[in-house]
Image 1 (cartoon, rainbow, N blue to C red):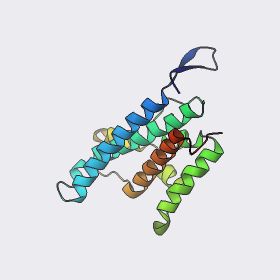
Image 2: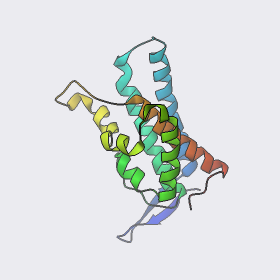
Image 3: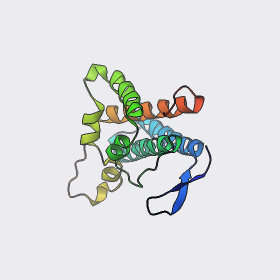
Length: 166
């Protein structure tokens, strides 16, 4: 899919976006986050890199979600809220992503709705953490990682024609 135009409710058009480029950019944010996480896990450095890890991974999730909108020929809001983006997808797409997420986290008893409710604005919360009145930020990084993996797999399966967004 290339740069198609989409007609807005007000009659104006705007570029819908480039699906393959969106996936490529999401993959880049995903890879940077995983590089940070890999170094953190091996003891190279600790929690001082939690903010860039979360910002990169949550932004990857956002771009993957917007790529799915592009692939589905749907408009999306220009927002960072993962819950609003996710729940704007078609029901069958939500089900597929939710199923993979919950299968991955089955041993932990986590579900996607709970994660999205608790961490719906994670990108902005962490990106602008220096503006918060508290020094304490909260994230379930395993859930964030599972969500990112589920979205990435879904997008790449769409690219391969394994999944249809009908």
